[in-house]
Length: 281
Image (cartoon, rainbow, N blue to C red):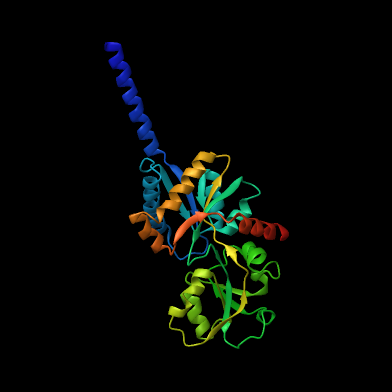
């Protein structure tokens, strides 16, 4: 009887220690948002709230995951190397850049305003320039210049290299660049899909038009390292994210980021982007 009690006690102690270890060493989730105006502290706070919902929806222990956010592409690559996350949330450009060196697989992507893709728009004052070629050497503002290879290979499909074709004026906020365009202090502003959709709500005096619009580009969401995650884990995480926007608390977070839902990846769109990326080598 005494031996059985000791065994049970040892089992309880071991279970408690394992539980403590799980809390002390949560699994890292690397989150990369190049060029965004969000600061690291605010982003990590939002991501931590999101992870708590994912854990609950996925029926995992609280604090199983921990986020590491950066807006710096170089730091993102360092975090991917140092933290070795099984799962990460990155931009399409960072996924494409690292795909050859890491066994990365897209799992789910966000749907925003009914679409899982976006287009980039190069905006000018209406009638000011006749063609894209006429903007060579001109000042172009925006927040989206942190991934020059992505812009060259995917957004402009290899037709030009923005850092050498334009005189780039980087900004932390799209609204600041647009105000400068409105005043004639910039020749053009490059906007992503979300920024372009916000244009009608801005009090600008000048009429703007897109002198160039990209093809549809897939929105990137959750990716997984196939060597560090099992098929079951990838399936479970995808199911948790897909259920997040249906959850009461999760819906508030989804609305905060402008996300309607997380849906299975559009493989054909990702494959098309990968082919375009490789063509630019």
